[in-house]
Length: 330
Image 1 (cartoon, rainbow, N blue to C red):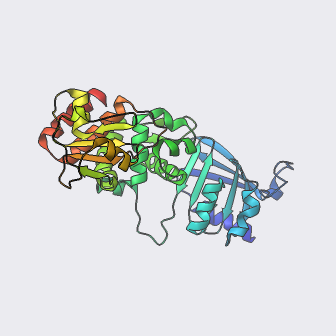
Image 2 (image 1 turned 135 degrees about the vertical axis):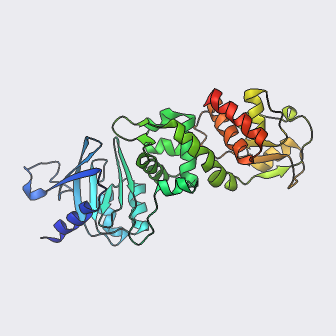
Image 3 (image 1 turned 180 degrees about the horizontal axis):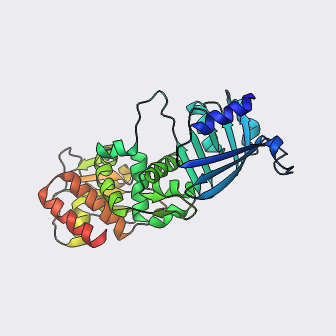
């Protein structure tokens, strides 16, 4: 067995059970001008995922330094793929940033190919951790939580490119792949040729907890002293109510005691507009918007923010109104 064959076998052996793979070495292929020119000349790989076939031209190499990737990065495309030894996190991130699909012998997979989007991280040397574990402990990472908010706000973005999705959610390209992989593993979405959301109800429940534990603690912002009518506050394009104020906008049932205002303006500029004094116990919480500027604001977006903040308050009055918003808007 050649070293190349050994790399391929070891890498294929660690693919998840739901992914079927067939690799054909170059010397067993019918002459193919497209395959037999350039770096990706070692064979062809067919991956079968959810009944769909995806074909790749393959380079099989040991990679230990960034320089070893240079020739591949210049020729990579959505239908090319590197099979290699275990990549360091640094080298793996370079591949992702440059659009080089790869499968390594540690079980790491990162592929973005016209309908097939895989991000699998090796569990070798780690405690096995899955989204199910995170769900049981009511914990989802900040990046995945932001992506979840964007998908729930505007489900159509599930069918745009990963780069656009990153802009909608204001997260990295790698986090999009990772988040979608988590959601697909839990049967929340399908990433076949026709991407679609499978379980909105569960996604909403996960969003509420993810906001409370992963997004809310990192919002930052500033607490302000304000005792007037909240509707008199200077609000302009790029400002969005959350929490109790958003609930009142949506239901006219709850008069806000505590205010949460998201803004796209620099905080210092918005503070000058509001003309309020800072106060750690203040009733107005001014925070930067955490989603991307590309995400169109809708009533559904406001409902998602309102419900999540109301539930996070643990106040029985707020939770009752959160249920009303959920039933009417979500």
